[in-house]
Image 1: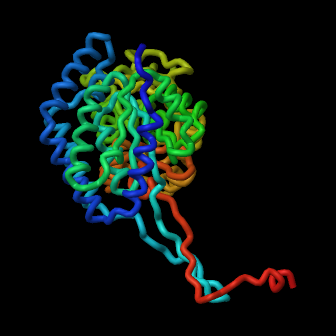
Image 2: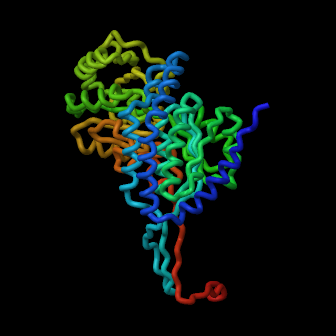
Image 3: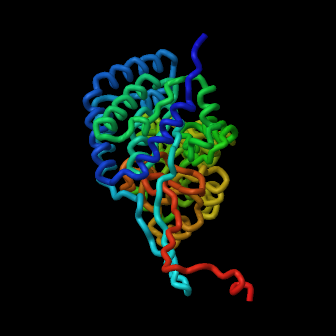
Length: 424
């Protein structure tokens, strides 16, 4: 009989490590991050060999090109992962930062101090770079990381986690600060989600099925990275040459990621001229268009969009297209179908842009720029834990600050509270 994977032991080791990390100096954490990057480079051959086998298995299983792209590491991408760890070491340390809150009439001085959350469990799917990104951000913010990647990348992730633990040990910090669940059985995840006494936050990164399952089963607070139903709206006042570049980049630069555009909205006043030019460019790039009836009159080669298309995150070279009558109609469509990750408007009209930025409810909103910038690295956060599509306690790309919370620090000079005085 197969021995049951001991998730609780892994979580206890992470809890013990989190206490040490909460007291670690910024210098110690930065040295560990650089040591983790160095260990990852030393173990590059083993990581890439494991990844090659898993990519081959994914192709044999008939996985989509976008899925295979998310799974794939090569020397350049792996070096990018190592550099991301080093970039986190260069970021300001949020732990211990204080901000004035109040000076009370009785002389008490009240401040807020940023502190680590403790143990952060990250449950993710096919992107192995998340293993290092998540561990690095957790370490710098004083948290231990408990990692559980998808079964498609279990060997790659295990090799990466082994390198990260080697780096921690070399830098004198507890290797238990990076725990990796290498058990593909879902029972291990279900057990993990019950350990509310040991784990402080769970972050699911993957498709909507993963997020829904984690939210349903977890006894631990969840910070959700939900699907990316991203829109770009080309307004009547848009510079169409600019719009073409933004729209093409938002969809075709890397279609298999959550910040890629899934629906293009175009104002009817510019629909004919814009859709003719952008459809030709998408055709050359192999992007399939699925349009509303009005857009298909302009570009007959488009497939007919169904109601389901407006709510589908393709993560592939497929794009829904809809012509709208007004800015109000565009905002209403986004409100109904958007997932709150990122939305963009292309327009030369500052007043209309201001309305869009104010009224559209998303973690990141853009004026005349591609949604592909919705990324922790691009926002100057170093790496990211994910892009939160909820509103508590962090939203948008989650970096170091999103992995901390605040506590009140109160300084006095012998004050005591007199409840009788308050009652009078």
